[in-house]
Length: 304
Image 1 (cartoon, rainbow, N blue to C red):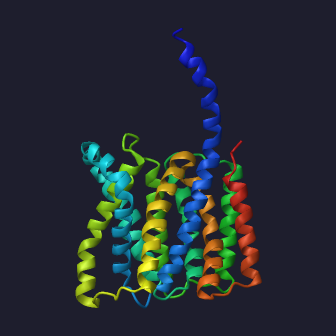
Image 2 (cartoon, helix red, strand yellow; image 1 turned 180 degrees about the horizontal axis):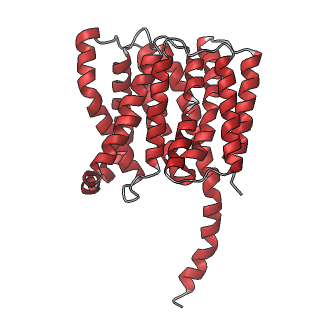
């Protein structure tokens, strides 16, 4: 009788384990598609909302959106969170305070499609960070990574140069890659929603001083549907929903595999920028996007 629970539980464990990679890749794709829209909003708001204020209100909205699910777990785990305070602070700095502020700064001068193209270099840095951490990539995954990277390089080299905001996007790339690699070492005792709420809260507090400076120097922006609706999108969808999906994807399949799916971002950003902002994409760009998609399919598969 004592072995009955073990015997009944065993058959359900394998399907869950088998479904984990598919779920992780699906969540990574969801986050990537939603994040592509944030490049469009950064570009759309570049002349109406200052970059720092854009980032600050984004995270205020995200904090309110995730609070019903994450505030209580974070409070219950407050001692554990304090124990890992340095880790939480670094994750909040890279993934919340710095990354999106740099993207918004780049949006002042850089087209949304080009921002997505440059940002697609992030998986290469993720792979480097993971490899330095001792993770083996495997031949198939490395081939997919290189193929997708070649597509990005051809895309950027074929007339879609980084422009004046290129350095800001490169810095954003490094910040996001560091955050993604850091997620792999997240303390398992801290729950996902508690971690999300805490990083959003800490990141918002880190932005508070620069928000005050921006208000004093640049003044505030005028609330209107054209500014409030994009902020709601980036606050709820691109922050609360997409970050939860991405963090879960990293936990399920790792930063390298999720990072290869992230190569879909220039494709999604180019399509959205064409549909929403009227930025055109030619046949050379479409061919490069096909190369990126092939690399994603090849590299996201199992090493076996």
